[in-house]
Length: 347
Image 1 (cartoon, helix red, strand yellow):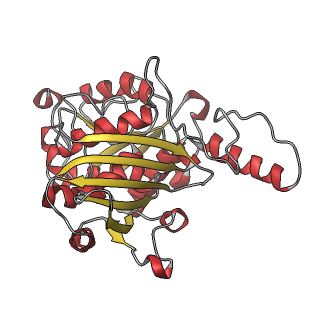
Image 2 (cartoon, one colour):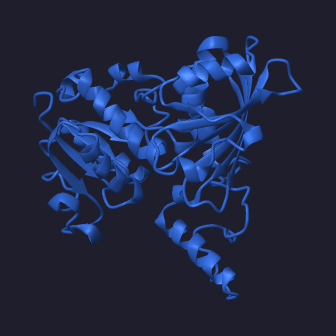
């Protein structure tokens, strides 16, 4: 077992958008690691990254001796390799959807429910990006007045789909602006440039909601530990490069004025309130890009219900929505002595 400040850390999926950002944040935030080892798919093995880090391939031999493994490699990879890292003595922070709803896996947002980390049995789950930014803003309101119902519309950037989607938006936009024909869409079912798609995520057989919409419903209830919250969600893909936006109608259990909600949000960790619409001041995706904060504005009463508020919530989906929260969880695990336990003690 390593001493605090002497951790050996694996980053799995290190060459992807989120994985490469995780590597950068570990360095920028000064995480106490004596060694960081990047892992990725077979085609990236041997590739040299920043700071001379060389990409490794996953194998039983290669995963030995780690204290912490941070995953952003997709659900199938997490399902296969996260338990193996745990068996080898590491604590896993996973950014995929594979473990989020597992009853034995805490689903944690640093500013919302960090105490849930103490119950980990080797794996900790990072929520979906849309859920993540929303619950950071909802937590102070929930604590003050309870929440009965949420009606959510998301406006999700293409970076949430991956680099291929970003390139597709740029290529389509360039073609249209130069009067050229666009290639057939590959990342989405339809053209995304200069368009809006009421379809973020995938439809499972027999379900009229996408998996992104189901994640918002199920993960929010799990994080807030309240299965009674009624939730309606529509997830929309928009031609924005980075930064998810959300219009959220919050029906509280007790009366909560917009002024009081604004005070609570201004005092909440990780939240920045920008709310002067007459001066055209409200959160924008282009301003959230590159930030670790969750921005909230357009705080107002819903005229159709005496206990409902309207919020506009924006965050960088690659940072706070994924990589930053994962590194924050690693920092909390370190601070609380929850890294480096033996696999037997966690089982």
